[in-house]
Length: 215
Image (cartoon, rainbow, N blue to C red):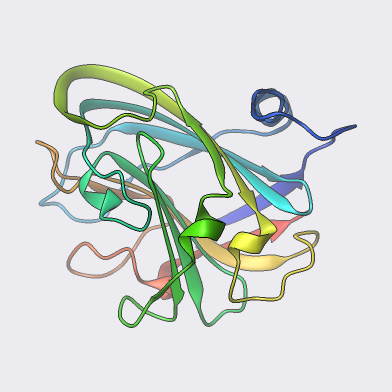
């Protein structure tokens, strides 16, 4: 099981998204999402991420290099996993977990529960408090093929953990996994940070989350 230490970002004032991006770049290290768990899906885009926190927000940045990009979904809590998508699943109580899913144009899906079934959506009004910017912009498009590199900077406020009474991220011990997928791209793929030991692609397996500790 992988372990990840999530650094508290040193900042002097409230940061804009661009300033947060710069602080994250200068104060954290990159981690790779590079595990192929299912041999039928062998395509491996190059995916890295940085993560940090400022007590009441998670700062997360993804870096993706891939052959096919797709962005059809525009509805909050829609089917973003069918597009070029990066994901962050986290459990703060060792029972239920949140699935933060982000399409390459910043469409967000966020739900909560203990398994794939019977998940509860986080209210879109809360989800839309997440600040996000993608180098691909925010307008939908059909699949493009070639060699694409894109980045996405994300700020997740504490109130997105709507089913938990979190006061601060400081010293929080949790479990999590990070993913890249693209179910309806020309090269469907399911790559993970921490390995998943089941027969078929399934990200909703909290038993295979890695350990994360917030500074």
